[in-house]
Length: 303
Image (cartoon, rainbow, N blue to C red; front, side, top):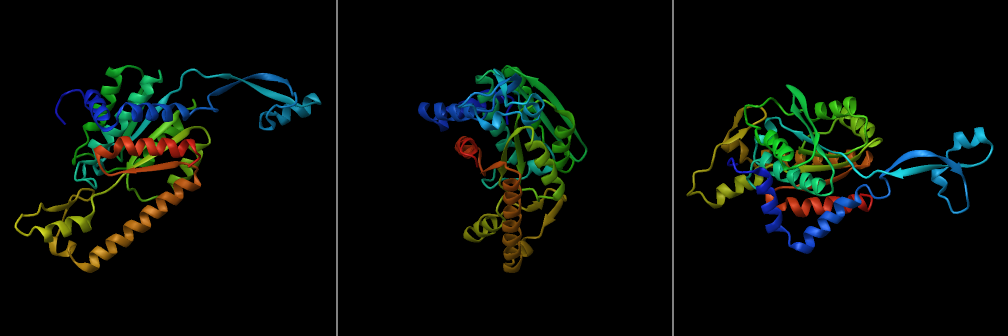
């Protein structure tokens, strides 16, 4: 992207892609994420008929000899932590042909803008196999711009993607309850990933947005439909290797590719479901606003 403000770019696109009512609904869905959960423990009081049974402190009640209810106070401000893969996978093409990092910037910018609008500071954890770094939660457009610039700096020369390392960093570092907004590509789930997500989900609200890969089958079919146009060479950005055209166009290779992709996506979705995490998917920058709205709405309804 050009060196104009990324925050301005995101908000301009939000304005174009969503009319006023839709923007209001999007804002409302964000506000609902913590609804009913935005409470910190204050003290105990005697149980009275009509109290929620789930608020009974059973251990304290046993010591006291009669039911005691946990009393809470409202939390007026929440912290939002953006968790972004900034490894070289994000420099690859997405389903739409755009770079994945550009879609990530748009998605992170939308959530960041919603958070700032609610007075919630926003931080960032990002990295790759070479290491993980964090920018502390802060308020204001200048802070959000810095976060987006960090993600926008991803290139093919970055170290390999390793989203598990960023999740491990969050689990090890943060104790305060937050909203985690994770942006990653169509990664292959592992047992370690699931263990980390279960651990994080016990403490935080988590939203997961998957950026869809370029479709090899569509790229091949497009080349067949337009043989007059010299196709761009295909490269595996993760391994820094070229993909030989005739091999990529082989029916057996395409069938194996589709099967592997289907199995990987099903495994990731099942893993996130088991961990109680709502997943959204997006393949273009233009689809980000609607994808995030759907993600927030599904999360509010319980997945």
